Image (tube, rainbow, N blue to C red; front, side):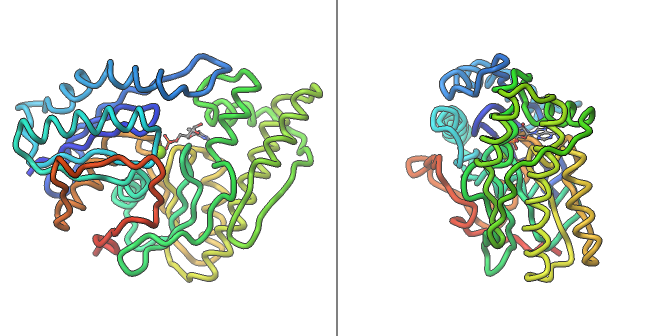
Length: 329
Ligand code: AMP
Ligand code: MG
């Protein structure tokens, strides 16, 4: 059995084939990069996804020996940018109809976690999902991910991207901030806002921009943003870990590529006798493989949707969808 997954929630168009054991056979992705100093414009991103879609799918279907004929197709149905979501959904519907194959709607956040669990060998984790669209601490209970803690305003990815944009650092902002932070030495005083298991980052962003406009060292600001923003999340993760008594801590999503964040979350996990399961860096950002991996699990659980009823939902929450395939043996 071959399963085709198509990702198109924001800046990346991805396509990937997994087999019936979830082994990733192909994973082809093309990411839109806005010019320095500019954010992702949904229409511009959608134009990029549209342009690259055929060649990305074509490459993903081509195996080393033979061409893969998928038995079912999964698409990212949300959350994400409407114009981008509709590109992937439309292509997936057309493929499903033409090939007469089942169509599976996939939640992009659940897909980050499914790929991270498979690649990071985790079975029943306290999951930390940090990306452009999510900052959430979740545990799986009674067929659903339950959000145990989250951001009350902007996501950790937004914080890094918005700061980087104003500082004229190149996209992706998180990578640029991480690299600048390595030269930072002085910890500047930035707002630290943790409320129970939740965090809030917009005050920190405002204060960091004020330092930038006042001519402080960019390296020190980047260093301080990372130290304070990551420590806030680490505190919320620690509290959640003590309360849920999970034995595994998983970290997934684009920001999970950050070495300093991994270090801090690993420390929290190990302090409490839990094992640490970071997503491998090559699978941290948005990619076709996450949709293929999660879509296959949904398909095996009997989840499909007739093409005329298929949908996209730009504001789909992580805890609004049944996920009956976790915990996994
Ligand atoms: P995703 O939406 O999962 O593709 O994640 C995208 C987010 O991850 C963006 O906000 C990026 O700036 C961020 N990101 C990517 N690499 C890193 C990194 N090394 N450190 C921090 N953030 C990162
Ligand atoms: Mg993502």
